[in-house]
Structures are given as C-alpha cells and as structure tokens.
Amino acid sequence: AIRMTQSPSLLSASTGDRVTITCRASQGISSYLAWYQQKPGKAPKLLIYAASTLQSGVPSRFSGSGSGTDFTLTISCLQSEDFATYYCQQYYSYPRTFGQGTKVEIK
Amino acid sequence: EVQLVESGGGLVQPGGSLRLSCAASGFTFSSYEMNWVRQAPGKGLEWVSYISSSGSTIYYADSVKGRFTISRDNAKNSLYLQMNSLRAEDTAVYYCARDFSMVRGVIDYWGQGTLVTVSS
Image (cartoon, rainbow over all chains, first blue to last red; front, side, top):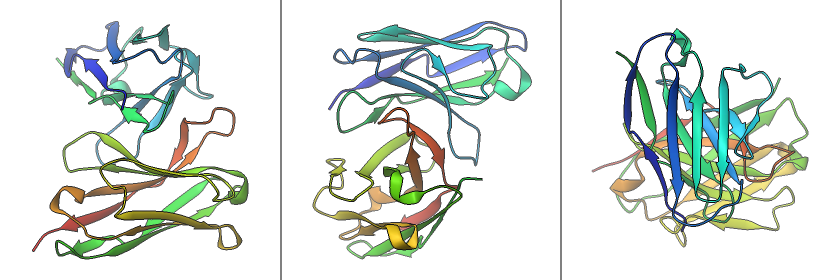
C-alpha cells in the first residue's frame, strides 16, 4: 500500500496567516491526490482533487500543488472557519490511503 | 440535495457481527460508485471498501479483507457493509461515502456516520 505522510501533524496559526501543509507519498502517484477538511464531529469535506483543482464552492484562499510524491495544501489567509483537521488522500491505486492528518489550531 | 444516512451501528462483542446500511437520496444512486470509510475515536480516516455502480467490482482494505462484505441494492438506493469476526480495532465511526462522478477515487459526499463499538 502507498503510505501518505503529512507534516506537520499540528500547526498553530493565527487568523490572517498563510499556512502550508505538506503531504508526501511513499511512491509516485502522479497528480492523483485529494485534500479534505474535517471539523470535530462532522464528516470530511472535499477541498481539492487532482492535486490542484478546487472543488466547486471551496473558497479561493485554498490551493494545492505538487505531483509525483510531494504535495502541498496552502491556505493563503486563514479564516476562523478554517481551524480544522486536513487530510490528504491518494487515489492512484487501491487501497486508497489517507495521510494521518494535520490539525490547524488557533495560536 | 444529496443525502447519505447510515444506520446499524452499535455495541457488539468481539467475534460478533453487525450489518451497516446506508440510505441514499437526492441523486441517481445506481450511477455512482460507493465506499465505506471509517475513523477510530480520535484517529484519522481509513478507507474500508469500494463497490462499483453495478456491484461488479469490489475492493477492500487488507485490514478487513475476508471479514467484511460490501454490497448494494440499486432498486432500494441502499449500500451495505456486513461485518463479521469483529475486533476491538474495528471500533470506529463508519461513513458511507459517494465517489465523485468526475474523478474516480475522490469522495464528494459523506454521510454523518454510524458508530460501531466492539467491546466485551
């Protein structure tokens, strides 16, 4: 199985900050990568697919980049509603695998 | 409006069985590929199983292979997960999740989840 490793696991930031989360695949996955946001007690929400394509309705402050093994999720100007846990997921091959998550908390 | 509503969770003893159901509405269920994804308490997401729109193609995570069976009834707009030989490590919230029609492998809608607790 392809292992997905996110860093950092915990990120402390303030409203208005630019934040970047990294996701690394244990082998090349081209651009078959998605990002999800999850808030406590809620189901995950799709943010980005194909590494950099924003899902409909997702604010443009979210962006994704990368291909192969290294990917990033960037939030350009952190808003209060963005404090949540973020997961990357590869869909290059089965089993689909998720990163362990990055919790973005208020500094 | 797309809705996925899971049911069937609860407390079960190790070695026991449970059948989860997911009622889908607001979209043409028979046209979509579906999944089960789980999340242990305080932990991350783990993909469990996939089934194609017709039911002809199925995949499982190694952790559940041989114990869990995914199925669907397109006439009833329902997805199922039969879970046998349950273990403590199967304790989790189980989400029913729809694959994005434009990009196979990406999940665009999730249910609210049903909690399965495996404990004696």
